[in-house]
Image (cartoon, rainbow over all chains, first blue to last red):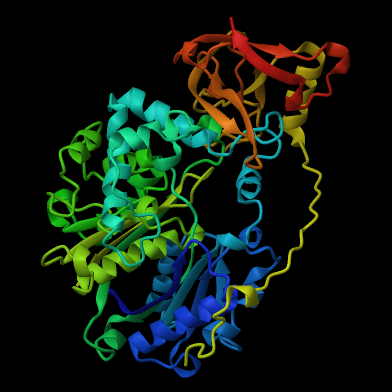
Length: 384
Length: 156
Ligand SMILES: [Zn+2]
């Protein structure tokens, strides 16, 4: 039997560079309220598993998971927190449903990065404390710079093609009501913006924003009873490469190749490039989109740059990629980034993407990365 | 029911600030201790060798990431190393302007892993992939065995 878990409700709140009027928990409450309304469920009665994707350091509180129940309607209900990206949260909820523990499961993740006083320092503390963190003092994006340099060298990709990713995604975001960092700029402006970690520039480096996103998932049987706008998860996979950054190849996103291979196999997909109608993929940094597209087999190795430059990944191109504007155009959402990509794909498959709508979109891929300095990624294949 | 009465005046949006004081000891471990001893005493980098896949890894470590077996053999590396990748940044780890600082992932011929460190060059644009580099270490008497014993790398 084919794998099938229904996304029966989505809700979100925030999507702004700062949200001073709402606490983190209130932001979650608003997103959850909308998601439950969308799914037509009562969280106090209808949900058997709640999953949150958060990390203590970004929350400024130890055992942050213990603070999740109230605003989700999950008090005295089964709840767990996983400290990983939202798509891995979706996978966890899928497992709870497949195992029979739950018929309906809720997944939440959020970013309140505007409350974090020193995000760079938190990112730096993610490096190995003995071998990578202490003997120099540098912007934690140094690893992104090294990855980009190595990617460009090994694939022979022109540097300006990375800038084109930022141009495309920021332009798309202008048509997205959630797009905080939309702009109509050219490659020259992108390449001449301040250097973040050479060759990467600031306009090629996504900026954090605030939002909470909530998903309601249901078994196939239950989903058929809950409304008429179900989007199906048809395959899902995730993978982690070594945390030793010194060991890595840097040019390739092998964790994406692995995660995609598993998701494609589950969804029985042989040629993803022709199967898919759109993709929302990692663009935390400009080069990541190209590197990920090649790992996802949506471009042959070393050709993603040329394709983006030729417009193949534009909204009206061969395969729209980050039609939403992605992280570069909308903003980065910490561990909620994967849920953001999934949200945008769900809107597309429901035909609710407004000016971003890809005509007759039926099959979508979403892919996320946990960010510097990780090599962890997740992929899900969706269909309507 | 969503939140009906929201804050509508910027002056009413309050927050308070606090910090989490964090302090840890990070245990070097068995392999880490050997690496440190070699660096402190002889100013050399120690790699571990896997008996199964025959790969070597620097810094020395207890287990092979591809075979999941203990690595018992070690060997010291010969410099120069080479630049595997590099970048130049303009801020420090807290986001304050600082630099430009050029960093590189230094590797050693025939060995997996490597060391990320500052690269002392007068012109960042003079750095190339594969460029041969050597370490600049603290005086033997000042060394503790920590990675901070390595001050930087420089062109060989
Ligand atoms: Zn081995």
